[in-house]
Image 1 (cartoon, helix red, strand yellow):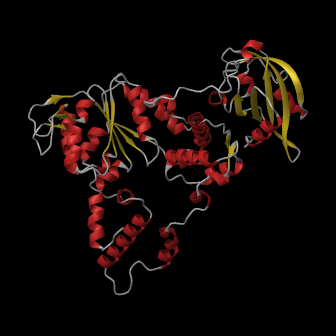
Image 2 (cartoon, rainbow, N blue to C red; image 1 turned 120 degrees about the vertical axis):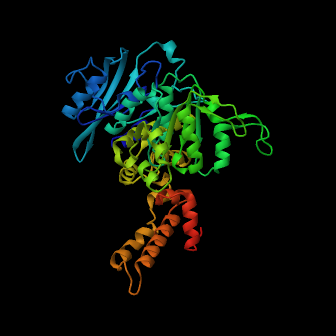
Length: 461
């Protein structure tokens, strides 16, 4: 809320070493040090903490910030020796000013010039940059959250990581299932072995079988001796994403491989012992998958020894600010920019949005805004059109008609009414999905079943 004042202040001051904005109670809403060689504090570690918690040597009486909040009067160029909670000692000249709205104090801003050796100032580091890794697996620290449900998941990950039990992760598209899967691997005793990931959606069964189990020369035309993913992941972790989209025939063979802890390559006869932790993921409720025939019941019980359910972003909106700051920090590093945050209007839009694409959608929106933003803060004009002017889905527009129309038309049989309703549901799913796989997932049926029903009702896309 108070971040929009930062850009104004940066335009007023030609040179500052640090800036901090607090709310009316002294809790930090924004922080940046332009001299990480002097002040190593990072915003992500101190955001929403009280100023006297971050600088425990200060009290409500000695802190210039707390005095300004109490009196409403600015304090200019005051010398302070600051001791941070992690043991840094900083000498600074601080100017602290109240932030007022309708003559009421809503916060304060504190700008600092650090007093250090002139020799150090000759080699100023304007911004500390992390090394950008070309190969990276997520760890527990990469799960950014302030929500209780996600904190519980973070607590459980180290517990399940060091067992050989299979883990099934359920979450909507974009909630971060692979992030959790990789965190399980990097938290485990297998972390120095391979993490192998395979998305099982839209891959024909025979091809997926050869990918997973490997092939022997001559098993089919052009086949060579080649290890499958179970062999490649031996000693490590195999992550099977969108397991609910896998053909039933392949599911039976995976179940056998897991239970026997061995595989045979296609065309081969010699069993190969494997030691692999299986982590799988589904973007449809697993029990729904069983009811609709998308997943074998025995495979579900084998894969879901431990089940982790990731809540959608709309159910943990208190994570929005943290995630926004995290993505902005990352894109600043990658693109060499210095964007400070999002303005209040964008924050309101984000808070009122349903986030059907979850965290992945948020990340993509922030990345898109970085490409077009010319300000220190992401503004409404930097957002995609669909977020500013949402299109009402066809199914929503027709709801009022359907609610006032009798379910059974005159002269219509029950079977005809059910077929008409099923056809309408399929039409809506296809209309509001990018792919047939998405439409099938929305309906809770297999892609093959969807194709059959589309033929039955003479539908196409």
